Image (cartoon, rainbow, N blue to C red; front, side, top):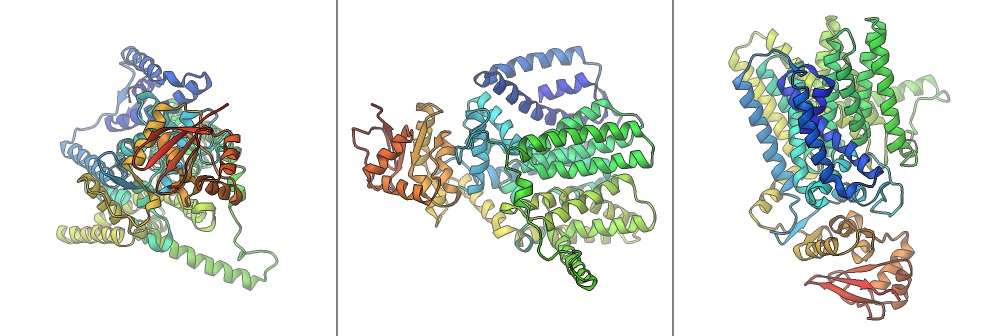
Length: 611
């Protein structure tokens, strides 16, 4: 946070509330870590990241002293009640993340074993890849020049290097603290900017942070991607809110605020590099603002400055990380719906297709989160009919429309299209808050009646969240987190997805006693799904990847005692073999090929002898 505060003082950020300044400082410090990664990687200074941060800290202190009079806060009355409320909200977020994320994914040093969801290994594996080499090697397939929207993993790689704490511990046990601060502060600041009444602000924050729809039917898994297995999406989600807040702040000014512009572009880069769909959605919002400035306000300089630079930074990140690095992922993985409107169809057929597609899309909108999308649609219709639609509301509505259309009609490998829809959840909540605000102002009901309606809304949305979340994962993760907190290990039917204390100890030994560029052969890689990546994630070493069924069959033969297969893998450059007794109890490496260098009750590590 100190580097972020210093950065804000250098660019002379003005007209921010103290809470907004705190949020911007933290977010800027987060983004600075990504700059530190690239600088240290390009100049081979990764082993000196700790010292780099010492230097940055000293320079930040001098910068703050030198620029101590440059930061001007917006005049505001101190409201102790609101301050205590925001502290309580951050505390609730902290405790919720602690239970469903950190304690659910606790490293098995106290408990005897723990269950891991495979998606986590992709995310932590990216951190391992970024720590080990630059340009990174894909830790799963060992392919060089790996590119992906991995800025969230990159920031944690810097933290891991600077603190000498393993990537797994940083990601699984500590990363949620960043999400609590950024998500909490960004939500509060944007809600305060858009919603005026304190009571309605609280309801809007609840809808933004804790409401979801019928995930079992739509597959749009809000709680999963924000809290349970976020993989840095909660960070890009937070950065969306910050970027839109900066857009709203610029709307209030006639001339270009260059400090505001710099921060907007800086956060847009990090947002896009963390999760591409999030960046695309906020770019849409920036575009609507620029069109308004250009065509309605005739503020050409402001429109062109924000529009051109936003397109440049988004396009640069897209080309560098997403398109060029992933074999045109967006173009190759999206498929075209065969039931489409086209020139070869008759007019009647096209009308029928449009009608049924529209009905299905409306059903989708209602089910993904009825507590926010229905009120937001009603509010937009209300202000449009009364000709009172504001630019802020138009921006949010068009982002919602763009995100949900892309999320519904596009299809990608792994259902990644849901990120477009998830990215607009907060803006539906904000417009729902505006609807509640109007309702509260126009209703002639008693205070008790209004409180009853609000209570029904909150209770209904909570029941929906608990009863219809994806695969009942919310309840499962709460139970598992509380169980691990008390030191009791859960019962798991699928042992492939479990890592024990003994197995973890073996990986720690590998991490502490072997060179990071060595190549390992592991029988875990013969297992199904993502759980085969456990050795690479927790040892932070490259694990040999079986390229096809034939290669996997030879690997199975090797661990069954086939010396011909063993010699083949030694010839491929294997330096160590990790043997799990549960998987391959009969394996033995003869002394002419290797020696046993580590053993516990469950795992053996063999070092290959080179002649």
